[in-house]
Length: 129
Image (cartoon, rainbow, N blue to C red; front, side, top):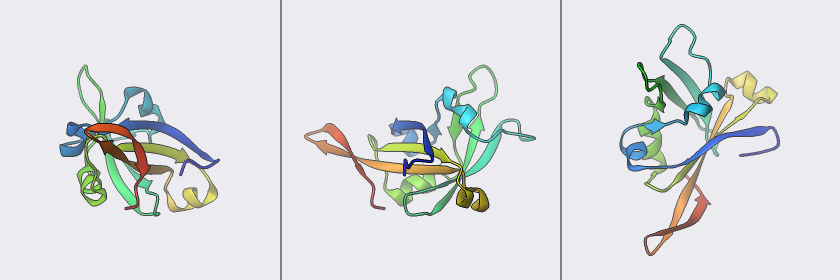
């Protein structure tokens, strides 16, 4: 993860909304995701985790003035299976080697668990699950 042919798109420390509802994506990162094509307000994409498991997510763009993108479908399942909590960190990467192109996976997702001591976040450690 984060290898020589991978580019960090963005990282985010998870909030209560990210854990319980949907994962909001920074607007400036939207250009890094697949174009919406015929579906003007959403796009499905695969992201591969550290263990090689593929996760299907749906990136939705809100209609109206505030077009802040959110990852909805697939996100809650990812949160549950990874045991994510508030203050954990999620990073999205992109890479385009031949194997990724052949399998249709152009995105990677990396999880880091918050290291908390006496209610203070001291840093983040790689997720083993």
